[in-house]
Length: 322
Image 1 (spheres, rainbow, N blue to C red):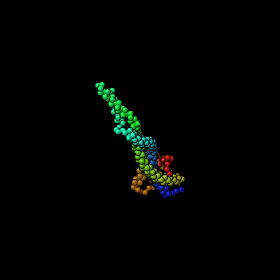
Image 2 (cartoon, helix red, strand yellow):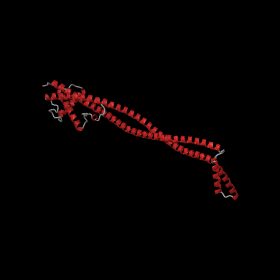
Image 3 (cartoon, helix red, strand yellow):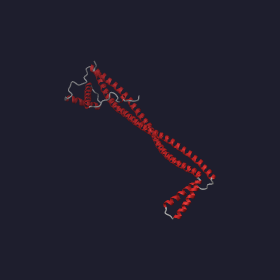
Image 4 (cartoon, one colour):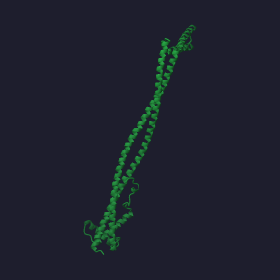
C-alpha cells in the first residue's frame, strides 16, 4: 500500500496530467480545424481546375472545328483562283487570235462598239417618232453597219468569246473574294479561341500551384495532428496508470466521503482554491478536494456538450495524395 506522501505525489501527477490532457485536446482541435480548412481549400481548387479543363476542351473543339473549316475554304478558294488563272490564260490566247483576225481582215476599231451602234440605232427607230425619210436614212445606215459587222464575223466571234470568258472570270473572282473574306473571319475567330486556350492553360497552371500549396499546408497540419495525437495517447495512458494505481490503493477519486453539497465541503473547497491562488503547500486532503472539484467540472462540461478532440481525421477517407 502507498503511504500518504506517495499518494500525495500521485495526486499531484494526476492533476498535472489532466491539465496537460486538456491543453493537448485544445491544440488538437485547433490543428484539426486548420487541417480540414486546408483540405477543403485544396478540394475546392481541384474542382475549379476540373471546371476550367472542361472550358478548355470546349474552346479547343471550337478552335479545331474552325481550323478545319478554314482549311476546306482555303482549298476551295485555291481551286477558284486556279480556274481564274486558267481563264486569264485563255483570254490572252483569244486576244492574240483576235489581233491575228483583225490583221487578216484589215479591221480597225472595236467590233463590239459596231454591234452596240447597230443596237442603239434599232432601238431609236422602234421608240422614237420620226419622219419617213429620216427613218429610211437610219435603216440604210443600220444595213451598212450590219454588212460591215457580218464581214467581221470571224473577228466578232473571237471577241464575243473574250467577253464571255471575262464574265466568267468576274463571277469566279466574286466567289473567290467572298470565300476569302469568310476565311479571314473564321481564321480570326479561330485565333481568338486559340488565345483563350493559352490564357485558360496559364490559369490552370496557377491553380495547380495553389492546389499544391494548399496540400502542403494540409500535410503539415496533418503531421502536427498526428504528433500531438500520439502525445495525447501517451498522456492518457499515463493518466490511466495513475488512476489505476490510486484505485488499487483504494484512494477515492469519484467522490469524497463527505457530501459535496454540505457546508463543510464548500468551505474546504473555497479554502483549497485560495491556497492554489497563493501557491501555498497543499495537503493530501487538499489534493483530493481539488481532484473532486476538477472531475465534477469535467462532468458538467460533458453534459453541456463541450467538444472533445476528434478520434480520427474526417479527411483521411477522401485524401487523394500521400
